[in-house]
Structure formats: structure tokens, C-alpha cells
Image 1 (cartoon, rainbow over the protein chains, first blue to last red):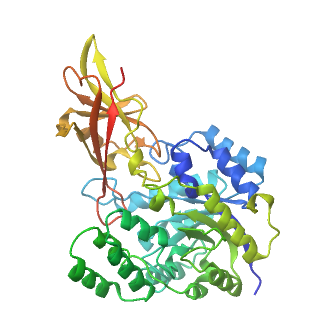
Image 2: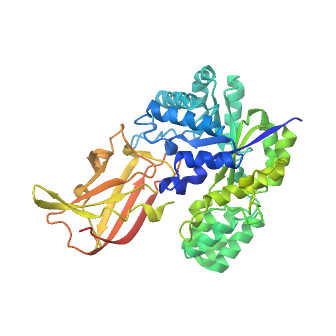
Image 3: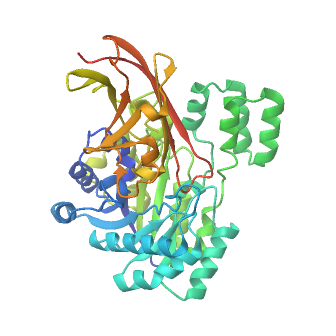
Length: 336
Length: 130
């Protein structure tokens, strides 16, 4: 089947650098362009101060489009949040949730995005109600399928059924590759040991995950052997992550329009320690996926207590791997 | 995330009003990869030299607007942005003595998609700016 897989970056990957003011928006965009990762995804309110409560001035939007033109990059997705717990003790009413999604559709359209990402906890009815407006604006709303959820989870199936029933193309999915966690991330284990988990407990939990044991059994074993303590935080990660198969994406490919290439650690030889990207790409080719796959570095929060976060090098290594998997000519910036 | 960055190293100082020292302030950031509407900042608690400050003595400000913690709960038209330095003012007649102090800050945030309300705490020693 014909496929068209394009490389992109979510600027989420550079959050440490932007948080501390070490990289500007232009630095981020230029870096992506140099790596040949021309698709740009953002968490709207991370990149644009003021969004959504205060709003964003037109000059900032013009600056964004200016950068896209200057570097030849393409706006891909605006990740929106929809804070339905805005009011203490009271969930945001349905109509207000829909109105909030419409605001983010408008914001995505101002930025030239084709897609806006919705969090997985939103109810399908809210998205279905917003879909006609999205269609009107040429935007698709993509539900992020993120661990601990996965493509066989009833919640995701309920979304898929609702989208089919609504008969709209404006709703779809954005899988996060963290769903396919084949091996316990080394950076997680090391962080938990620094947090005080005894190393034999950490070994046991890691091995249990790699052996695909049911989390409930492992939780019980850890309580019995080591008792309460920081090991409970580590074993809890087994309830929130799993080694699901990338093949599960195949049934959903017609509704998948963007992908979060989540990663925790790219090793020096440009391999993700836990997530099987070779298999992921095989599935995407087989399914005829057409769209971007955007780097989403999330090792940052696991290593920041012990070392400088090296976002750029980590993204470079992942893009290097993508280049190889796609058989593209390696841009100079991706060569070590 | 960013736990070690929620208290900024710069900006810890006594504050004067009409010639008398009314309290002290420091700069703080969110431990988060995005910003947050102010109504979702559930609580900020501050301890200095091991003693917790009364909640009603704390004022939060960003971009020249200022709120008590109770007022924050119903503020729907402003935000604490990603990486933005907010000023945390603590009312204390005479302020703090010159020199080094132990400063502790906890931020409790209501995050819509999380099935719990996380609190991030960081403690550090800072020199009061002259």
C-alpha cells in the first residue's frame, strides 16, 4: 500500500530549553528545519503565553507564520487541553466544553494547523458536537491514544464507534508510541533508584515488566517483600504502561492522521531503548499511513534531577533513526 | 518535572511600603510543561526557616495583577504561563533578617486529566538580596 510518512517534531521535546529561556521559538523551528523534520507540532499554551484564558495577539500569530515561511516548516498540530476542571468541585458543563473546543479549532486554524490534539479523557459526545465546526474550518480533531489506554481499550472503542456513527471525517486518532513499551525504560529505573527504591526491588520490577507479568501480581509481590515506600511508585508504572502491539493500529489507520513519536532514551547508536520503532514503521508502511510522525521527547522529566537535559541531542538521534528507517538522505545536522 | 526550578534563585528580597518593611517576596514557576488558568492553582504553601506561613498572608502576582489564594480560586480570566515567573509575597512586619534562609514552596494544582491532585514541593536555601 502506498504510504507517505513525514518527519516532524513536537516542540514539547524542547520544554526544558524553552522553560528556562535557553531557546526561543525561532531556535526551535530552525533546529527542526536543520534536521529536515519539517512538521511542527506544539502544545498551544506552552508555545503561546496567554492561551486560552487571555488569548494571543495577532502579532504573535504573524511571527509564527513568518517563521514557517522563513524555514520552510509546516504547521501540523496544536495540542489543546480543555480544562474541564476549571471550576472547583464542579465539572465544566457540556455546552461550555464544546464551546472551548471550538475556540481551540479557531486557534488551530489561525496557526495554519490541519489537526488539533485532544486529550484522551474527553468524552466522545463533546468531540462529536464540535465536529461540524471543525469540518467547516478544515480541521480534524484527533484523540490522543496514550498509555495506559490503547487501541483495544473499551474507552477508545467507544470513541471510534461514536465517530463512525457521526459519519464525520473531522474526528480521528493520534497514537502516542509510548503505548508500545516493549522494555522497561532504563531512565525510569535509574530515577526510581535515585528516589530511594532498593536496587533489588528495582531489578524485580523491571524484570516483571519485561516478562509481561500482570501488574496486580507484581504490586502484591512488591508489597509483601519490600513493604510501602518509593518502590510503590515504581511498581505503579506497570499499571500505567504495557507492551501493546503496534499492529493494533492497523484497523484504525484511516482515522490516524498524526503520530507522537514518544521516546524516553535514544542510545548513542540511535536506538530507542524501550519502544520498537522498526516494528512501528513496518506497521505504518503496511497500513499505508499518510502523515507526520513527530518526535516527542519525554526522557527529560526522568533525568533532570541528575544531569543536564540534552533535548537537542536526543531529538537528533531519533530523527537520525527515522531517516534510516525511511531510507532518506541524512541531513548534515543529523550526522553525529 | 522542573521540580528544582519552582523557586527561582533571583528575586528573594524584603519588600517595603511607605518606608517600612511589610514582608518578603520571591519568584516562583509552575512544575509543568504548560501553563494553567489561575482557578486551578488550588494551593501554594510557603515555609521559611521551617515555619509555615499562614495561607492568608500570601499574595500571588503575575504581570502586575495580584490575588490572595482565595481570590485565585475564582479567577477565570488570567493564567500562570509556562515557565513564567510569578511573585509570591508574604506579609510579615519587618520582613526577614539579612542573610541565608531555608525556603520551602508547595504547589497544588488541579489538572483536568489526572485522577488525583498533584502537589510539588521544593526546598532550598537562598540569600536574601540586599
